[in-house]
Structures are given as structure tokens and as C-alpha cells.
Length: 281
Ligand SMILES: [Ca+2]
Ligand SMILES: [Ca+2]
Ligand SMILES: [Ca+2]
Image (cartoon, protein in one colour):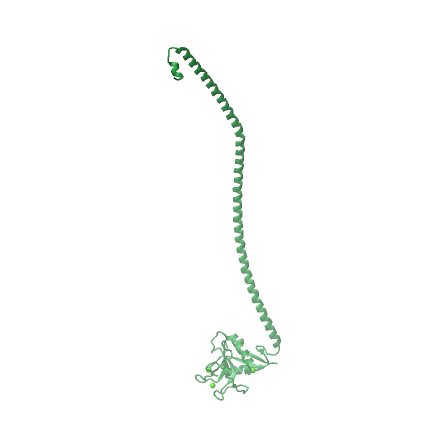
């Protein structure tokens, strides 16, 4: 039998009931006191906790604030760095363009310099040639070895004559039509003709020389009565005595083979340039 059954059972219930009520009252008092004490302790603990956590939170807030400020500074610094980089890239591109422009200008100067050097070399060569030939040939004549030469093309590219009138012009200049009597002279004439009429029609821009077969067909004699026995100077297929007869010789441009430069042409009908020769002083 438990306490409650013993309390409510039997006839002697008055003192037991009062004892029970007293016990419950004491228990309530004890519980109340305990609750009050616990409440006071909790309040104290809470208050202490607040006293402890408040400075830490403030410190954390300060640090957070500092971090926020630092983050803003970093962002601003990053933006400044971006702008500086963009400016540097633009400056680099501009400098690159300027460098390329200066390179182009420099290349142009280099080419002009090379051209001037070449021209200087040519002028020095011409001066040397002029010094060597100075006083040795009349005006309009070129000096080579022991002779002076007049190329009519150098005086006029529009005046052309037949063989007879060409020889007359040479005689009027105190000379005669050229007599080519050495390989060196052949080379000199070939190179000179090439310089003057290269690119023009070959057959219509030749130069009369003092060589004919007027007296005996196919017996070629220079105007100084020396017979030409060298066949290698004729162009391929020449002399061919074409058409109404061809008894006078001319030198034509022959870039591919300077030795094969001669052609026989009609002395009276063909009008071309001519070359005079006279002994130098
Ligand atoms: Ca000669
Ligand atoms: Ca002939
Ligand atoms: Ca011919």
C-alpha cells in the first residue's frame, strides 16, 4: 500500500491529511525557493554573459568594419590599377604605331641613301672618264681607247639617215663612219648601243657602220679597205641581201649575244642612226 492509499484509507484520516497538506506545503515552499534561487542565478549568469560578450562583439564589429573599409580600398585600388593598365596599353599601341612609322621613314632614308651612293659611284666613274678623255675628243664624241666616237642617237633620237648621208655627216664632223677592228671596240659599240636603244624596235633602230659589199656582193670591206673576215658578228641569218638588195652594214642591239649584232640593210632606203669614229688627240 502506497502513501496515498494509506492516507485516504481507514478512519484515522484527519491527522494524516493535515500531515500530508503540511508536507505538500513545505514541498511547495521548497520548490518556490528553489525556483527563485534558480531564477536569480540565471539572471546573474545572463547578466555576466552579457557583460562578457559585449566587448568581444564590439571588437568583432570593429574588425568587420575595418575589413569592410579595407575591402573598399582594395576595390578602389583595383579600379585604379585597371585604368592605369588601360592607359599603359593605349600608350604602348601608340608607341608601336609611332615606331612603325619611323621604321618606314627610316627604310625610305636607307633607300635614298643607297640610291645616292650608287649615283655618287656613277658620278665618280664619269668624272674619272671625263678626266681621262678631257681634251682628247671634240664635244659630242665619247673617248674609248685611242678613238673618239659620235653616236647620232645621243644627239637626237628623232634624226635618222641612210648610209650615204650618215657618212656625209661624219665627214662634216671631222671623222668617218666607224671601223670596228678589235673585239674590244665591238664590245664597246655593243654595250653603248644596248644602253641607248634597248627596248626599241631592233631592226628600225640600228646604227650604220663603215662596212659594205657595194663593190662585190658578199665581199664585205670596211671604208679603210680592210676586208672583214670575221663571220661571228653577224646576226643569225645575216647578211641575207633581202628585198631589193642590202649592201651596207648596221649594228643592232643584241642583248642575248653581244657578238651577233650586225645586219645588212638597203643603203639608200633604210634610215637609221649612225656611229662616227676619229682618232683621239
Ligand atoms: Ca676602230
Ligand atoms: Ca649585199
Ligand atoms: Ca639583212
